[in-house]
Amino acid sequence: MLDKDLAYLYQVPPIALRQQVRRNQDRFPPDFCFQLTRKETDFLVSQFVIPAVRSLGGYLPLAFTEQGIAMLSSVLRSKRAVYANIAIMRAFVRLKELMISHKDFARKIEDLERKFKDHDRKFVLVFDAIKELLKGSREPVKPKKEIGFHVR
Image 1 (cartoon, rainbow, N blue to C red):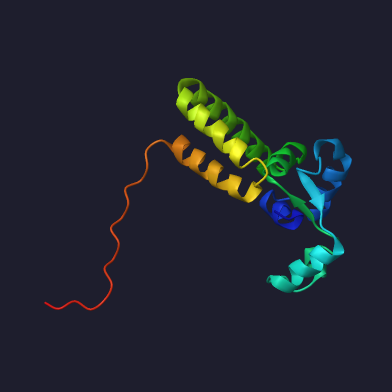
Image 2 (image 1 turned 60 degrees about the vertical axis):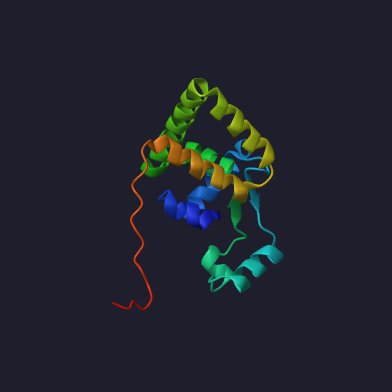
């Protein structure tokens, strides 16, 4: 995710977010956070619904991986960032409890981690599946509305 989107999500000004990253550089290795190049930024502006580099804050944007987003929630001071950090920690604790009580589940998670270690986008699917498991019961699937022409 880009810094401006995370700033909106965590309800902090984008400049404050970038300042905290700069002040805590040791917490953001390249696999957590990196700055886009001018060429990447120009491509981003030309390919998506971003009117100009100016709408990105006038700077080359920072991009964050899942780990970087989690770390960001621990260095920002907004209430929302604090709540996000607490939620992340609770999810990790709950996941650990599940892994202890479900050895087979733990093995499958480890297999998935190895398989998707370097594929951040695909790893999001793993976390989504884990979130579904953490929710417990699933909501019943609503029947789909029939489409087409029916003869009586």
